[in-house]
Image 1 (cartoon, rainbow, N blue to C red):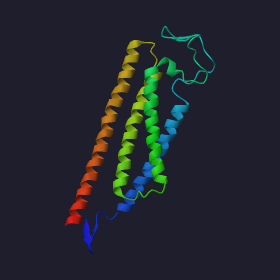
Image 2: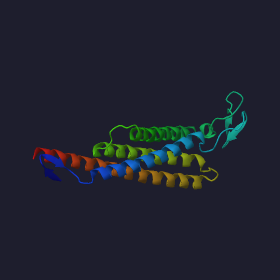
Image 3: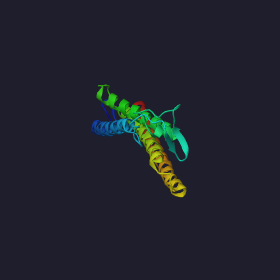
Image 4: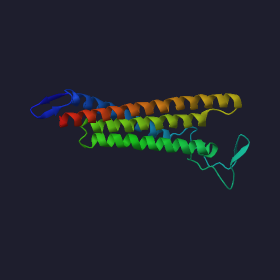
Length: 193
């Protein structure tokens, strides 16, 4: 931090850091938008290819005459309703967060300030947390239930990985918030001195 001619200069390479961070955010946001879009149009388990009125899964009737499985709808939405709904919710949140980041970065909105780039980084951390939850729900839909103990073990592993990943992203987001607050305090301190 330097003070020159009444102006405060916080960091000599602030512009370089901001530009690099913006570039990374753009690449990651675009990649997540692509992944989540693909997951929606090609969900785990695929789609019913034709109208189905006679299907069972694990002994339960999934499709019948009064409640048919409609061609073009997701198979998992009939078989794993809760997992599918969670999957679609988490996936939609990821998609909207990543599209919002991309929109802000390409819109010409003045994002040359560290504060705004840090805020976008925190939103990206939230996006990644929901992406981990999307993965978890998707994995639960495609793991076969043929042997209960193997299924339970697989679900437990997926849940453990997610339970590790989400708090890790929370720590990264907290770290970014603390860095932002320290930077703001330094800025205010330098302006007051």
